[in-house]
Amino acid sequence: MTALPHDPAPPRARRTRKTLTPWLFLAPGMAMFLIYVLIPIVQSVWVSFHDWDGLGQMRWIGLANYSELWWDDAFYTSLKNNVIWLVLYMLAVPAGLMIALFLNQTVRGIRIYKSLFFFPFVISQVVVGLIFSWFYAPGFGLLYAMIEWLTGRGVAILAEEDYVTYGIIAAGLWPQIAYCMILYLTGLNAVAPDQIEAARLDGAKGWRMLWHVVLPQLRPATFIAVVMTVIGALRSFDLVSIMTSGGPFGSSRVLSYYMYEQALSEYGYRMGYGAAIAVVLFGIMMIFISGFIWKMWRDEKGL
Image (cartoon, rainbow, N blue to C red):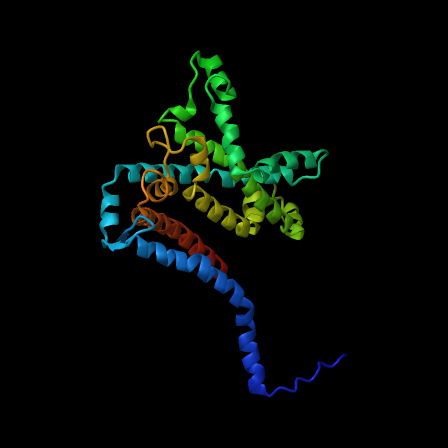
């Protein structure tokens, strides 16, 4: 047995070194988190109490931006669309799980299937938006032609106020399902084979095996999939910008896009009002994410 090398440092110095070492390793990450996350959040809250065009003098107006937001119909349209995004986007989690279970098999040609399902994850949101814009396009779009063939009248999804949000969400679900699928495929590789074998010996199979043996071991993957899907639904900006620019008549706006319109587009340069929208969006995200983290913590503690 090899003896450990003797540490000549006095006990007090060793204790100090043990205390400081973890903080030194954490310092770069904490500094980045402070600079790129915490400070911008505090600045956004501060700006939301001002009237500011981004260049001139800031003028303190207190809660006036939030009061205006309370009576703003466009804000409620954006908020309603965000809720629809949130509800329908959660379909990506079970859909990703089902596809991952299908792909987690050793059958002939499974690599080709995996590549096909990975494809939407590796292409950019801009390309996804263009593909679905062409898919819905009146005249030559495949979906438009199918609806016209079935009903005798085509529907321009992105031009109809009642359908446009659902059309964009369908485009967003395509890469999000692939993302959840990758998370679950990674989680399935960590499922304990001895527990699967023991469950089989006890007669478990099918739905019972999935519910009582596999899903509990996929809890970390499910947590990440749910959190990232909630964040993706609430910050849905790029597809709205590419496919409709918030139209028709603002019916497909979401909060992040409305914030951009008010703060940075030709409609506004109202940084304070845009920051107030950002603060509301941040508050909604924190409600969901804090709830999930709280539940995860209780599950790990066995409470």
